[in-house]
Image 1: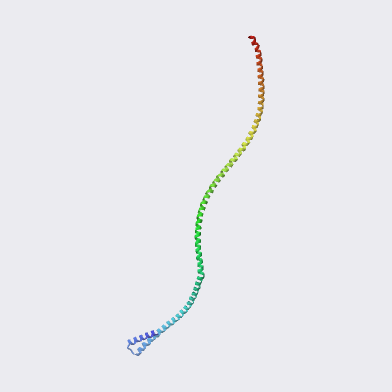
Image 2: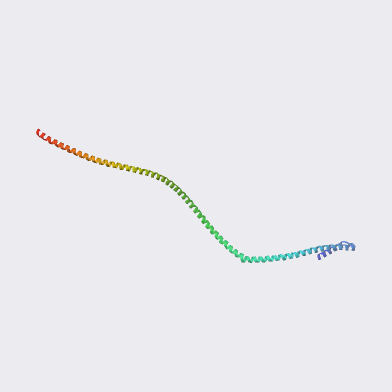
Length: 226
């Protein structure tokens, strides 16, 4: 309001100073200035009323937001209490659990390393055992082949043995027959030998007797010739 009055006074002073007309012209200029001022006043008043309403709305919004801020502050305080009362404890527990898990992880890493070494050693032993198994399997296969050949030879030799046994029995029978014949021939030979010895003895005795007789006959003849 003082600003408007000062502007009206300045406009009125300029108009009065710059014109030298009569009262009608001055009144007309004054009315025009008052009208302009009233128009500007109404416009500014409307703006001021609008600003007042806006301020009221802003106050309402501020109150509303203040309530929300208070609620959020209360929730924040509750969350802080919960944080210090529960979350920190859980965090401490979780931190301890994480540290324990880290230690367990390191331990498991060591165990995994040992397990890998053991796996490598077992793989090496498995390869050696597999090679030994294959070698023994080959030897067993060769042994089976040898056994089959030996079984075949055994069957063949058994057949030959049976044949030889049969031949032996036949030869034993023939031998018994030959021995029987030999015994018979031996007995006959012994009898013939005894007979020959008796004959030879008889002939020898006969010759000796004949020679003795001849000698006795020759002795008188010799005596006569002397």
